[in-house]
Image (cartoon, rainbow, N blue to C red; front, side, top):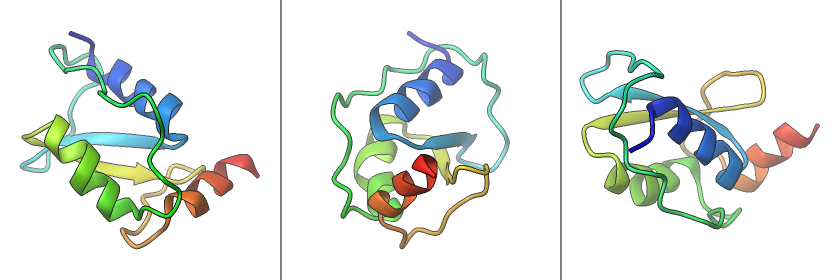
Length: 93
């Protein structure tokens, strides 16, 4: 089972954006935390998907007990109504 840091990196490689994973109760989870299942997706979610929908349909089912912040190219958290295509375009600038 990979570390949290490896899972965050895999999400970045598949989805095209960075994330920060937290314990569900709000505490920061360390990157060297082991025992995470591999991110189960090989293909990025549709660009028309919102950040909130991505969290609900992809992240939460795969990692119960954890929350995630989706980050823009500067490392700031983005709003749930942002489309993934818009977010990915920020990384290409």
